[in-house]
Length: 301
Image (cartoon, rainbow, N blue to C red; front, side, top):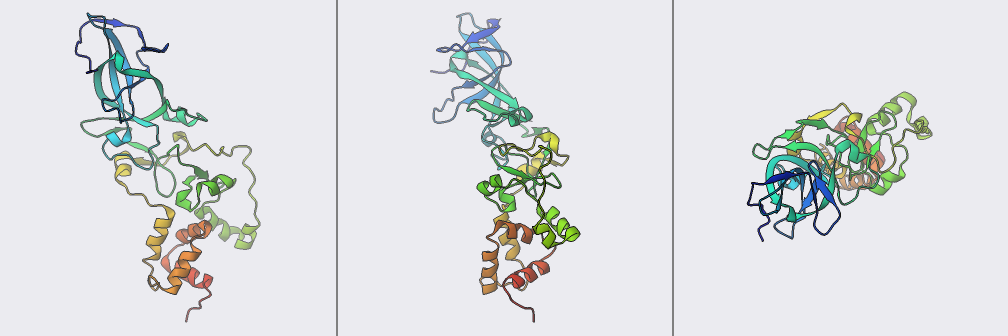
C-alpha cells in the first residue's frame, strides 16, 4: 500500500490517536514513521499539522529529520548514534504510517539525560537538503583532534586546564579512562614538570575540585568551551587516533630506520598510553629520538 497521502484537501484537526495505541499526537510532536524499505530504521519527523480529508482519512504534514548518513559528508566520528538533523524537507504522509512517538531533544538537554532511551534523539544542526549547508555553521570543538562532542564517546577532563579529551586521542582505553579519577593532559604535565620538577610531580596528588568533577557518563555541553570550528571543515577533516599519530611521527624521524631494533624498541615503549602521550607532546623529533635512545639505553656517539 502506498502510504504517501494523495489528498490534500480537508479540515485541520488538533490531535490524532496513533492506531493500536493510546498515544495522542499534536502539532510540534515528533513521530516515528515507517520506512518504505522495511530493512531500514524508522524515519523521524516533526508534526507540522494534522488534516482530515473528505473521506475521513487523516494526513500528517511533517518536517523530516535526517540521520548523518543521509546528509553531505555522511556519518562522522563525532556523530552520536541518536543524532538527527532537522531539515527543510517537508512532506505529507498518511497517519497510518506513524508507528509511535519519540522525543528529539536539544543537544544540551540530551546531555543531561542519564540513560537515554531508544526513542530519545537529539539535534544540534539544521540541514539544507539542496545546498548541503548546516546551521549553525560553527560548533564547539574539543581535544587535540578538534572534533565536536559525541555523547557516546567517553571523555576526560584535565584537572588543571579543564579542557576535555577523547580517551583514544590520549592513548587510553575506555576502561582506563573511566578508572582515572584525575587526568592531567600532556601540556599541563609538561608545564608541571618545568615548575615543580619530575620527581615532585610523581608524588603530587591533585585534590577533587570541590565536587565539580564530572560523572563518568558525562561529557561537556556546548557552553563549556569557547573554541569554534566550521562545520564544513570538520566534516571534511580526517581524524587520527593517538596510535596512528604516534606511528606517523615515528616513521618520519630522521635517524630512526623503520624496522630497526631501535624502531622496534620504540614501538614497544609506546604501547604504554602515558609514554605515548608524552612522546606526542615533545617539542620536536630530536627530543623524541633522544628519549627513545635513553629509554633503550643507547648512548649517542
